[in-house]
Image 1 (cartoon, rainbow, N blue to C red):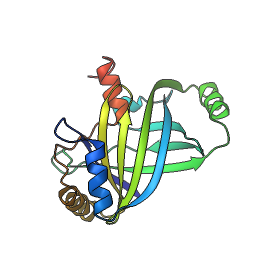
Image 2 (tube, rainbow, N blue to C red):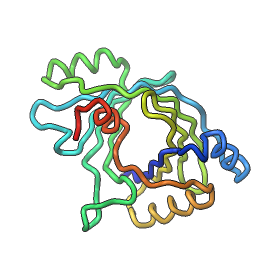
Image 3 (cartoon, one colour):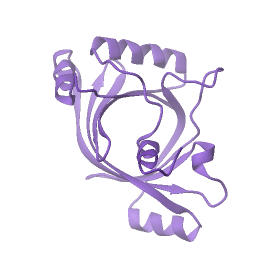
Length: 185
């Protein structure tokens, strides 16, 4: 399965509260609020910053999981309107134990991302309103599937229906934080 998503920085003319009101009035189903603590790791045998992969341990109030994300899938021109990538998730019992295993195997901890996420189900998508420590407010519109073109049409429709303006950001939150810290070009 592919995770196809559009991430848009919420500018000063809008707010997560404004988008949340539009979601509610459009009949979106509220899925919940989570605090997410994401720790990212780099492999000893290849540099994930170069290969565009990600390995993360995510801790929330109710679960802990290990996620591997493959390189972003781009169109023929090398560009993408939204981020699409293969993703695998597995539940784990302990972030500390998993981190110990990764470190023993030679992985190194890259950085961490902390965010509060409100999620809604709307028109075949998951819409996430994110407050990311050190980066600001974002909206993500995500479709899980195999057909990237169809997913992009659904995302564009939802973005239009909710009046969300702004350019799609293809960088991950991790990449934005590393860039802000001067650790990524």
